[in-house]
Length: 238
Ligand SMILES: Cc1cc2nc3c(=O)[nH]c(=O)nc-3n(C[C@H](O)[C@H](O)[C@H](O)COP(=O)(O)O)c2cc1C
Image 1 (spheres, rainbow, N blue to C red):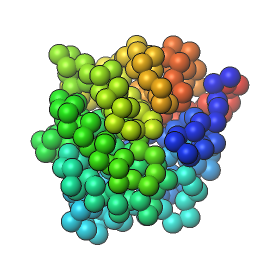
Image 2 (image 1 turned 90 degrees about the horizontal axis):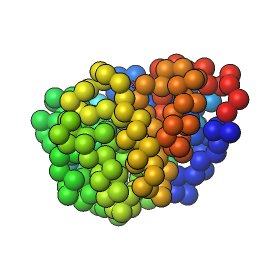
Image 3 (image 1 turned 135 degrees about the vertical axis):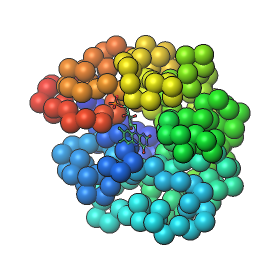
């Protein structure tokens, strides 16, 4: 009932259960393992648009996709429009879907205005999506959080603007930047985002068991889910 095929732009995915992108974890062998075990989509570790712009070899190595089953989603981050455009041009040759990270809470990322810091500058966030979509040969998706902090819960507005800017899918992690990975993910905000958007919405946060996965679908009506922990979803009849 919930396990379905999903189309992102012109890209047909085998199912709607995704592996969450994780820096330091979702390298090529891990992605291959998860795809072989049924993940509908996996993402590369996030890579810096600026590092690609400057041709950093270490960063390029993070984008090794040798023998990886398609479709391949590459996640880039950054807040500098020129470097994000150049990074998109580079990634065009590798990816089937280009994902923009607007959720990373790490201090070294947000201090440059990147990742979740963009949730405090929705004009810039929208502009980045517009420009990346213009340059991209593939559907562009964006991963956001609930907001920056409890005074800045911006997911609904951000999602609407990102959709209008041309994104083909949005993933929402139901925590603010302030919460990092602590506390309970807010699935109600995910539900509200889903109600407002036409493009596919993916729910993320606190899916640890197949029951959580089922509840996420039931409670939010999302088109797909993104999980980080191992989860026995294949054993249940969705
Ligand atoms: C070690 C680690 C690395 C992560 N790296 C990324 C990343 O590169 N890009 C991204 O969008 N999210 C990243 N995340 C966030 C996850 O994709 C996910 O949104 C988050 O863990 C919430 O889901 P959970 O409640 O199931 O853990 C990372 C999380 C962890 C724990």
